[in-house]
Length: 121
Length: 121
DNA sequence: CTGGATCCCTCTCGATACTG
DNA sequence: CAGTATCGAGAGGGATCCAG
Image 1: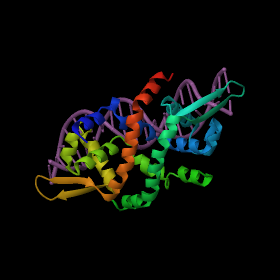
Image 2 (image 1 turned 45 degrees about the vertical axis):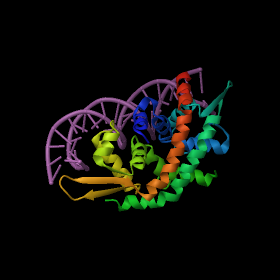
Image 3 (image 1 turned 30 degrees about the vertical axis):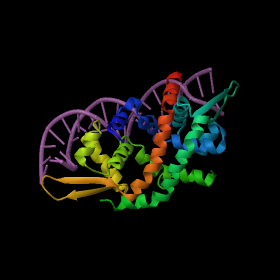
Image 4 (image 1 turned 180 degrees about the vertical axis):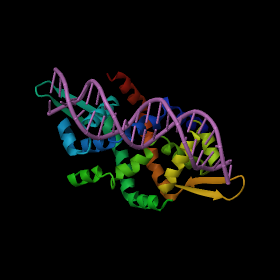
């Protein structure tokens, strides 16, 4: 990495790390993406039921964030009661393999990491 | 992904996503890892000089977090003035390829994502 | 059913000053 | 040089209530 690249990273506005890690680094986005990948298409209430521990507000906020980044598609059926379906976009699907590789590494190293933390004074 | 796995993710204590993404999802860890990978060995002040925008406190906190996870090694030379060197551990190096794959995706998609965000009402 | 609006608390992070 | 200590602002996130 050259200095040019470092400055690139330091510039929050145009920094790819900021623009991507900030999103997947929040509390729920990765989990929602993984769940959506598995189910292909889900309604709001289905996601909520699947991820029991997320609050309604945070699910709304998370989905909105993912939608604004073009990672998730939101389809509204204009009917009463409302019906809204979520699914991954192509861009979202293109991100998932990278997330899986991270999760795989996480699974393999989690126990050692937890052990390291405990030992760390 | 089966329900069993979903509950696995839902359990914060043993969830690999939580335990890893929480760390790399903070503001500075990934950047520090990338910088350390490039330079191999760096002193505290060198990292600080390279990442100009990080505060002294946050650099300390970030390095401590990475060290506690066994991703970075901290070597102290008992002398005056003090000298401390940081470098990646094997575990840290094993994580880097996954980060690079994410950063690569980020670079390729950042402009589209930014455009999506602007267009999003 | 799918959220929007509000309140409030916690935790992160930055700025500043100080120390062996 | 390499941190530690302290303070305070702001964002993230949960609970609850409300609405089309």
